[in-house]
Amino acid sequence: MDRLQALKVFVAVAEAESFAKGARATGLSAPSATRAINMLETALGARLFTRSTRRVRLTEVGQTYLGEVREILAHLQAADDMASGAANTPVGQLRITCPQEFGRIYVAPLLTEFLDDHPQVRADVLMVDRIVNLVEEGFDIAVRIGHLPASELAAVRIGQVRRVICGSPDYFATRGRPEHPSELVSHRVVSSGSTPPLNEWRLGRDGTHVVRVNPQLTVSSLAAAIDIARRGWGLCRVLSYQVGPDLGSGRLQTVLEKHEPAPLPIHLVHVEGRRAAAKVRAFIDFAASRLRQIEGLR
Image 1 (tube, one colour):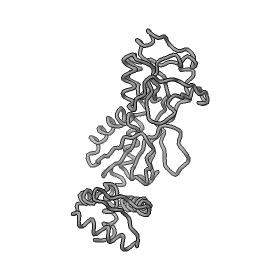
Image 2 (cartoon, one colour; image 1 turned 120 degrees about the horizontal axis):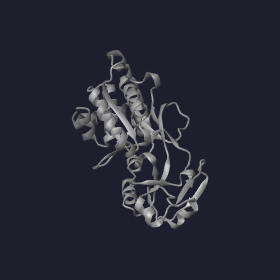
Image 3 (cartoon, one colour; image 1 turned 180 degrees about the horizontal axis):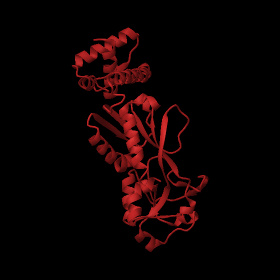
Image 4 (tube, rainbow, N blue to C red; image 1 turned 135 degrees about the vertical axis):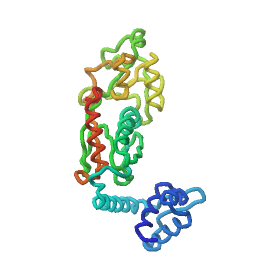
């Protein structure tokens, strides 16, 4: 087995945390995958994995090596694409990461339409509420909500969202509408998320006004918190896009708009800039055009 194939096997095994699954992903048998890893470890003079009966894990050396190998394989793929014409024609696998609710509401519908127009493209979407390292984890595009740190990544701004406090008309009819942040302490609040402090809401344009609330109910699911608010049980705090249809229909209403923090920008972020493959450029152009037309993201 040549070195390039061995590197592909290494990445597949690392991502699957299994020799058998990694072998299947590369079209090889498990013994062949094992021999490829053994060859690499012998050539490097270092162990890349720790093995157990249930799974394999990267060593510290293996974790560092994985990032470098992914970058090498990405450059080789780009060179192949350029030579074969894929640099100008959207083909191949497109890997996208985005926040869960944004992905469900916006990315999934856009992506299915994009794939209908580009049948030679395959897509893999990771919807997760954390910052994914595009290079180390092998993704092409990320949707980022919030201000971007300085980096070498290319970014296309496609809109903005507000952080809003909302409740149902039935709730406000029963308990009244808070007119000042200090009144929140007397309102029933359902909090969502897993990162403390969940009882501190930062308000004001610069986000420096900290209001302490006393959630009577905390749930790990944002969708559950929104549904509870819809049913009139209490107030919840979310990003405006997460309740866009509810605000449009009147099922939910916002309060304390004058005390909202400054809107958060939304960007499509990718690695290669102008040298990006056609599949990346085509999806960014398509998605940016569509997302910029959505009222709730302006």
